[in-house]
Length: 161
Image (cartoon, rainbow, N blue to C red; front, side, top):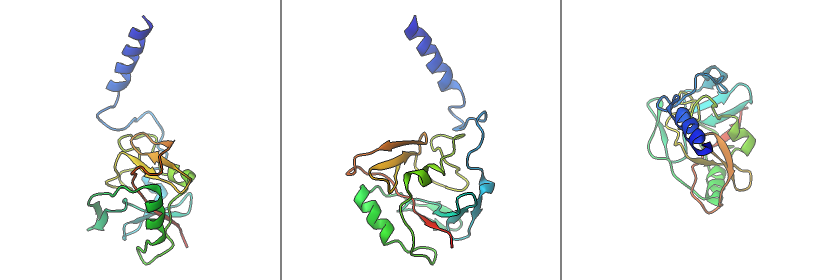
């Protein structure tokens, strides 16, 4: 009987908003008006004061939208890519720490669990943080420890001047 109850609960959860990719009963955690959408493929978070690349490394900003294929990297490659990044007339890009990366999770959405107006074309997979071996899975917004040799995506951030 317990297994049947769990199965019914699971089916009910699956049928609720699964195709919409959002749960309208949850308060928005990263509303679009929290960000200044800069015309150069970056967005400034008014709450945290951080400026984010609106797309993952490997993608590019073309005609006002993110396009292309995001690259997967291991943790050391991600740190190196951040050190050498020069974009939008700035060279102070870095890998976000886990707290910063979690700050852009949109709890109302899943697959991806991010504001897709601000952060277009975000893969619903893991993204590295600078916090040793940690990242955020943007399919559900959960943070995890990952094998540092594994391939995850990278989104860079910088302090807003």
